[in-house]
Amino acid sequence: MSSSRIADHVRNIPRSGIRDFFEIVQSMKDVISLGIGEPDFVTPWHIREAAVYSLEKGKTGYTSNLGSPRLRRSIAAYVEKHFSVSYNPHDEIIVTVGVSEAIDLALRALLNPGDEVLYHEPCYVSYGPSIRLAGGVPVPVATRGEDEFSLRAADLEKALTKKTRVLMLNFPTNPTGAVMPLEELKKVAAFAAKHDLVVLTDEIYSELTYDELPHHSIAALPGMKERTVFLHGFSKAFAMTGWRIGYACGPADIIEAMMKIHQYSMLCAPIMAQEAAVEALERGTRSMERMREEYRLRRNFIVSSLNEAGIPCHLPKGAFYVFPDIRGTGLTSREFSLKLLETKNVAVVPGTAFGTCGEGYVRCSYATAMDQIKIAVERIADFVKK
Ligand code: PLP
Image (cartoon, rainbow, N blue to C red):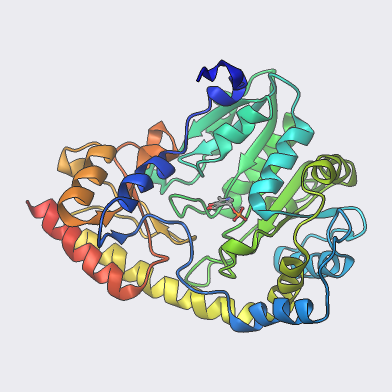
């Protein structure tokens, strides 16, 4: 059948590099996967129970388009406590179907056709395509291994044009685990203010920073709240990927514009997921900390094992990914990943799935049980030796 019936802007969007790779993985038996960016933990029981209770009480209907008032109040309190920014739950917060929907809504609400969006690469696979689907032009800014993939504010200046409207940030970063030192984050904020950009800050991994490192949100820096949309959710820190729940906080005019798109496309996020989310925010900190401690141990183990095996790997400060440098093997990221899969049944993701500057690196997720990680790194060491 002719593909011309598919709209051009959709036909020209590439499929996710991760998806393609995992179709190969799924066709194989007994693969140890360090590929998926999804917690191996089940959502803590007290959070699941909150959803069960809500069903028992017959809460099965729609909520307000913006999300249940109770959840929005919880979000306001949580964000104020952990990120030092206060938002009015009445009109500055919207509950979405994952951070994924929040990204899409924000871009669609902000971009006119041809507007340019700056973002740092390597980055989460959805950023470029989401910008294009919203009619914008993606302008990736490369980050470097020697900076542990943190962003240099000076590099943003070079990519700026008259059409730049939005700056997207994601710290800690998927796929590199990068964080931003506060001093550099201040320079990025000054850059956004100087050029009158709106900042979309995806802080979905913000609870997952290690070694007592404080997380700083750009939204909390002086003068930034007015030009920032803060995106967060439950998938990673609370192991709630399947619940599909996230949120955006920002200036009332932008939240209102996002709500208009959301009310016609999604209507609202599922009510039982919203009930569970309240429990996660109000009583989930201990459960989150237990998972974070386990991630920290796995991170330390995987980083030291890869370095011992002769694969340089920096110690990422956040998220649950390591991004080792495989250039010493003489293979490209894709060749390395495919050969490792074929010969050792271990799945990692080529760094190029996250942008061209990911060449020479692969992403390994340590949201995988420790016994599996141990076998996987032994096999990787053996693969590299050969
Ligand atoms: N943002 C980043 C940086 C991610 O890594 C992911 C998932 O991997 C998402 C957003 C999607 O999150 P959600 O499950 O809340 O839609």
